[in-house]
Image 1 (cartoon, one colour):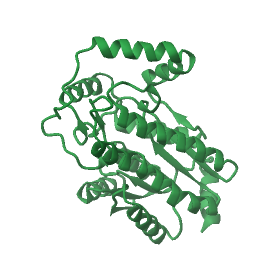
Image 2: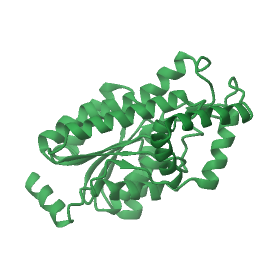
Image 3: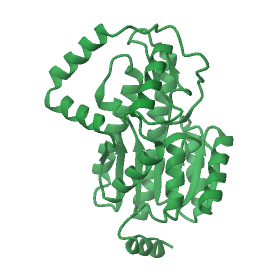
Image 4: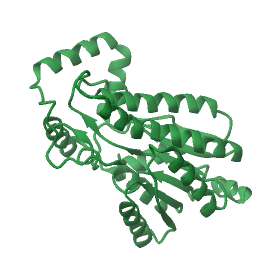
Length: 301
């Protein structure tokens, strides 16, 4: 089995995302669904995990109708370790061995309140999904891939992980943690045959705002920026998989993410001061108001 898998990767020019046996969390919508569809287009089998089983089933139907590929749906709340462990067991069962690619994508949006007004419930809720969900995915799947001696892990973070914008502390902390985890894991897996990539986009056209806990003013701003500057999920997914094939650790698909990355690193004090000034001059959001209709379920970024 492993000989055939390695031969297939070699014939594909080393592209581990071609013909992958992939697990994607948060695959019911947004970037997760885009990853699942793109992997199917590359000849892969995809296990689509999501806390909303109906959404995962819909992704599977799309894969089968558009690409005629093999796909499976699986319920998984990534904030629960036992759910991720069950996902890994199911993956080994249907693939006849460990997956060759794991995409830890599931996440939620949260923002609009300053530190001190956020509340511990929101901290625990968002970190449980955005950070602990990725921790669970890496802790459970990394040993399987390491033992197999091949494969890849893609963790979905955000430019928020280094941009540190005011009013987004919970989201910033969760995504910074995903970045640090990915960097550490990449070093630990160096030379093992398992590659690690972390995706750090800015605005992507997904359900993350509608499905998160975001104040009304911040929701309006995010919706506007997504319409004006947001990349499509399909574009981000394809770019990330190509970067993973090329062995890149960081993926910053948009120009604004790249600009912020360099500003923060070359002029850290000036960057932080400018953020503070901007935060003071911009109209302040009503931190007590949550956007009408905003849902609080866990979904794909």
